[in-house]
Every structure is written in C-alpha cells, then in structure tokens.
Length: 443
Image (cartoon, rainbow, N blue to C red):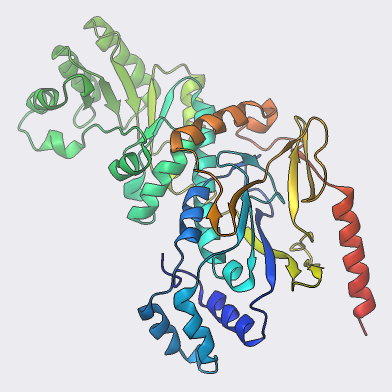
C-alpha cells in the first residue's frame, strides 16, 4: 500500500517532524465524528478491516521517494528523511470499536498510538475508508429497519463514485443489514451473497418478451427473476406467469409500486406461483420502503442502488482525526483544541456503554458495573492481535447491537431526546487542568 495515498500535508508534516527532531515522540490520535448527519440517531462503524490492512502494508517504494524528492515543498528537507522512507513501517498500536458497533458523536471509532510520522501519514486514508463505509453501513441499517421482515439488496455499483467504491459499498451495506449485493467482486472478496436479475436490454435484444423470458429461464432455472416492466407491467407479469416453474420471481422497476405489486401478486397466485417473489427497484430509499411496507404492498425484496451506495441524503459526516496525547519518552503532554464548535477533549479515551447511555472516560478508567468497554486492541507494536471477523460475522454482530438500542434511536427520524452521552469526571478534570495551563501561559 503506497504511502503516497494521502494528502501532501501529511507528508510535509512528517518531514517537519523529522527536521524538528520529533521522530521518536509518540502521538495518540483519535478518529471520531463531531455530530450526526441529518435524521441519523446513530452511526454503524465500518471500514476497520481495510484500515488495518492499509496500516500493516503501508510502504514507500523507491519510485515514491524519487517523486517526493523532486517536489518543491521538500527542497529544504534533510536527505535523511528520504533515506528512511523505504524502511518506513507502522510499528504502533490501534484500538477500535468492533465493526458493526453503533456509535455516537465524540466517541472514538479508532485510536492510533504510534511515533508521530507513523500516526500522521495514515490520517487521510483512515478518514476516507472508515468514513465512507460507516456512512453506507448506517444507510443500510436504516433501510433494513424500514423493510422489516423483507430483504434489501445493494444494487449501487453503477452509481458509486468509483468501481472500487462500489465494492466497498457492497461490503458496508451487507454489514449494515442488506441480504447481499449485486457486485460480483464484493461477493468474491468478502463472501457476500450476490444477486442479479436482467436488464431491460436483455428483453429488448429479443424480438418478443416471451422469448426473452423463456431464454432467461433456460439460463437461470430456479434463480430466474423476470424484469416485467419493459413494455407493459401487467402483460409482462402474465407472460412470465404463463411460463410457470422454475422461477425465483419478478422485478418491478417503475410505476405505482403499491398498485402494481398487488396486481402482479394476483397474477402469480392465479398461475399457482404462490412462492414466486416480487422484488421492487427504482430510486428507492428508506422512506419509500417504509411507505410501501406501511401500505402492505406484497413486495418481498427491495433492490436499492444510488441512495445506498452514495448515502445520498447524508454523503458526509465530518469525521475528524485529532491528536490527544504526546509522549516524548520523558513526559506525557495532553492536547486539545479550544476553538468554538471544533473543540476536542484531551487524553486517550474509552467508551463505556450502558443500556441507556454512554460514558466517554479516560482510557485508564476502571470499567463500571453494567458497562461494556467498546474500544478493543486490534494492532499492538505493529502486529495484528487476532484475525478480524468475516463480513458475515460483522453483520450478525451489528444486527444484535442495533437490536439492543432503545426503540426510539432506531427511528428513521430524529429522536428527542437523543442518546445520552456523558464525559467521565477524570476527562473533565483533565480538560479543566489543560485550560488553566493555557490561561497561565498567555502573556
């Protein structure tokens, strides 16, 4: 994994640490979200597996180093910095909440403790990877909540912001509760169930709809799903039903899905195809799904693309990565920002989860009765502590964790009051002490 996959200022700061003689200082950084996006009452942490893979394989090639040497920003950088880059490795520690954990503002999703250069350079990648997958996993959890007992399948690669984003969206959506994805590489890479029907072009490539359906049935057998709205949805349903078994079901991609699904269900039942399913697609989101479910539309599965793969209504959540401690080998110095709307809390933290509230405490605080400590060691001294769970394992964990949340937090609309988040007394005392030190240092 190339070390150039970051913002330039991460690299200039790394060079600056080298020039200032701060290479041996160990920084503790925390990745967290300042506030929740609109209509979200929680987020689902995702992307840890890819973050870990990046840190364990972070390297600078000789070509990378040559490129950096030629940049004007490094004209005054000591040669020793460039000489050290080919040997650069992440040797620090990472603590993180398990993927699939519901998290709230101010709570560290992951903590990095490493020599300054090693902790600074990964900032861009970690924010992008964890931020994106967390958004998609959260969106999927909302759709899963809206759908109830019905299935939701991620269909968004063609609308994702890049092909690789589509793969990661498939993974994150599965973690958040989707039954699977249309992305074949996501299925292969992460062991996720894959689903697919056929496009309108399949139907249009044949002279008649019946032939298109018959050929599809010959190919797919019991997995056959007919797209029936190319010409006339009701007539398409009749033609699909007339072919009989084998069939998985039909897909509706346009029109009044409530009325059409009832009509199509009657046609399938009259043909004896009571087990044939109806899938709905076409610019769906959690609110449209909620409406269809509330109207008792006989739809068995929803395929969601654009809204899910891009988290369209909330494409960003403002995650940040902030230095909270610095240790030069002799003394530990706590750090925090005091600026309005962007203040931070000093010191490495632990999140203590109770059924009705969370307490953000100091990492060295003792766990209280009835609480779960969320942040767990993942990497120690540059080595993975234990194998990470599979996507299926994370999905199961997320489902259990979401189920434990109070019902009001699982609403698709803002809940009042929100989750109760408190800071522990040791953190508040540390903040007061740091502010006093700052006041005394002013001229």
